[in-house]
Length: 341
Ligand code: TXA
Ligand code: MG
Image 1 (cartoon, rainbow, N blue to C red):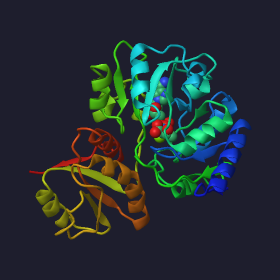
Image 2 (image 1 turned 120 degrees about the vertical axis):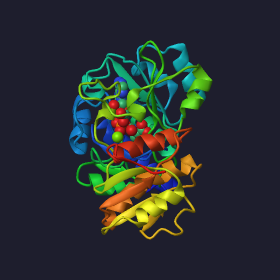
Image 3 (image 1 turned 90 degrees about the vertical axis):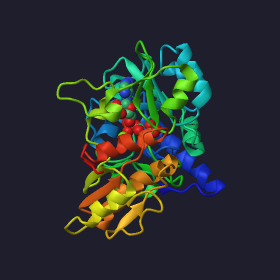
Image 4 (image 1 turned 180 degrees about the horizontal axis):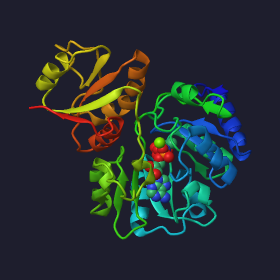
């Protein structure tokens, strides 16, 4: 069942139904400002197990717990250090997830057995209303099948999850289009585990130095332990092979135009399509990282619909929200780079 939220009565009905289903231990796909989430009661091991099953997600990859009010925080975490307070004050509600020592009532199923828990307060009004209505802390990974690009529209959720969830709530396209920034404050030093719309620069301005986990820009070596388990899995991948191309727009054009074969697509910055002799899509201007993030997953899915076999992507810079776009693209490309110039 897909619930619309365009009118007041539709919204009320959707929120009421979603809240009830969540209290019954059911799964509901909900909109957030980052990507759609596959929501369930974070306190109910069976409901949480159902999330892993529906997504085909490995059990050792912990979930983010979502709250709508600060009053719910003590139900989720056991310690709130000063730096966490500062970040919450500055960036909540919004696209920032903070890893902290967990409240023991959060089941092992939710945290994959870790003694920490990831917590976030989303800003999307529909997500907030549903969490409040449920009266529960809500576990929600991205609402895609494991390995596919995260869903940024209800239509994506319908495709991935029909028959596997009790309801899908349509809140329109997601504003940011990439998942939340994840920072851990559970160790000795703040550490960025996953870049997102809250940037490294913004985090450091708020709390001082933040270490960047190796997995943010690199590939884990064989045997290396992932600080954020999700980063070790193949991710965000369309069926097509993705290549991340570094170099100028001009050399990109020459290189791609000369490629032999069918069903080769290009993903370029806005205004760079001219002179390309392969079909292409634009994903925001070179300096407009917010637009790149918003278009990214949607486009990767579209390339699959078009039957693309290979996608050559202009590599974004890694400042600001560009780091998040880069982080998702290197995974979509399974770390395949082409260096020109
Ligand atoms: O924007 C988002 O964060 C979306 C929306 C729905 O809120 N959710 C999302 O969840 O992206 P998911 O499950 O796709 O990604 C959660 C990430 C994974 O990389 C996971 O390994 C990491 O957070 N994570 C969760 N709990 C953790 C913990 N205790 N310690 C370290 N990493 C953790
Ligand atoms: Mg995910």
